[in-house]
Length: 617
Image 1 (cartoon, rainbow, N blue to C red):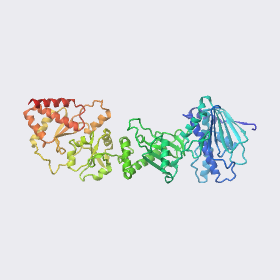
Image 2 (image 1 turned 120 degrees about the vertical axis):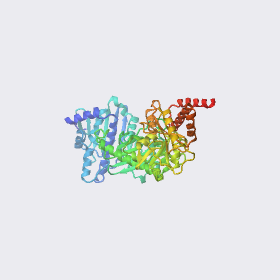
Image 3 (image 1 turned 90 degrees about the vertical axis):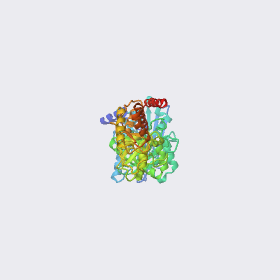
Image 4 (image 1 turned 30 degrees about the horizontal axis):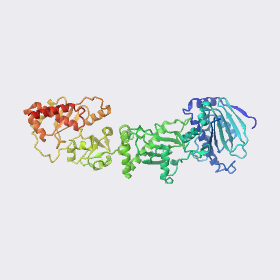
């Protein structure tokens, strides 16, 4: 080697270097990613140069990246056989922070009307991350040009650097890192392999650690769908998500506008939240031209899509100097919007074309779609198309969507109607369906507590109001054919109603007859200040079963044709105390049918009193 020449870093370079080394990067291991990215840039530059230049130094060298660890010497060596650097390029690229050889190269291609998407590095800043973990760094390099010479750049990252000639160098760049004692972990083979697999698994050139190729999985999201076999998709999914099963669904999506996007999104077969194991965390990794930027970006997708797995790659992403955070959060938001809308569209396509697969998805991840309807105003209407419920128009266990419901609606039906119950049988045995079925109205049968909240949040679908069938808002026209049985006359009905209201004044707001009772004697249709039975159930669900929600007064409807109401009318005149017990019991039964009877103890006590009177007589 000849005598080294020494150079001082510029004042602004020293300041930026201090930030890079001491506070810019959160994870020290990032320096490995940065150096591999730089090496990938150098190899890509050489590959482009080979298209126009014939006299390339060491032309038969493979375009690859090699890492070698020396635990005993506390050294890490990273070498590429890329384009290399001249002495002037060493001074420009390594002597000045934020001066980017890669940036210059992209600019040159742009001036020629081309764009090389494979160039990703901001060489100066990324390179200097190595000083977070090193005592000293030597960079051996030789340019691709035949007349070039081998050089060695050396620095400890403090005040300056030196450059001297180094004989015997091959084309490309070799970085020898002398690690600090406290960072000797980066001289261990297994540690480096893990870092490469985490951040640089999809770099387009082979990456080897101590002679063993590490990036064995292809970045298939950048390939044409027609060229990818099913087994490749499955292998990639299992690698990326660390799952032992094949995915249930996948969306391979690319776009050029409004953003350049290459994405591969997967839906797992199992919802771990449903299994009660843990809360899902979004595992869609964000890449910029194959290099990992964020393994779990928190703001890319909405919270209700936290079950997704896969990769999103975009060359439009502007990164700050550390590559760890986005400079432009608005762009990330737009990227997430494009992908979210496309994924919702994909689910709707699956629901129509692959119904069995979609229903399998719904059974696993339906609660998260419901969460999106209830909490995400942006996508609420689109997500509503994905909802599935049981219905009076289908057999037990069969599900239907809101669009199909509307297609089947009776001509005189104005609202989308639903009822909530613990199961289908309990809903069908209640008093609310009989009047609706008699009119040919279809009713959605909701059996999950959150379902009512979802419907209340949605409120309408395709200009049709969504309404609980036990709501006082539901107005029914009188049936042409009345139910069998003689009705109490108007005078008797008014008298009985007034008596019930007075006897149950602490529990009812009104007592009335209505058009919704055919075979049942009574029902409740609303509560003062609560917006109906459905609203109170939602409040109970949100506050929790341990919270004591005071019972509100309800609107009590009676069926003047029913034999029990006829009997109550007679009992009112004959034995008022017993009649009051019966009236309370009827109200208890109606509240139970509406899933509003929070504490059955009083009802049980009253039923015993009633039985005692009957048996005594």
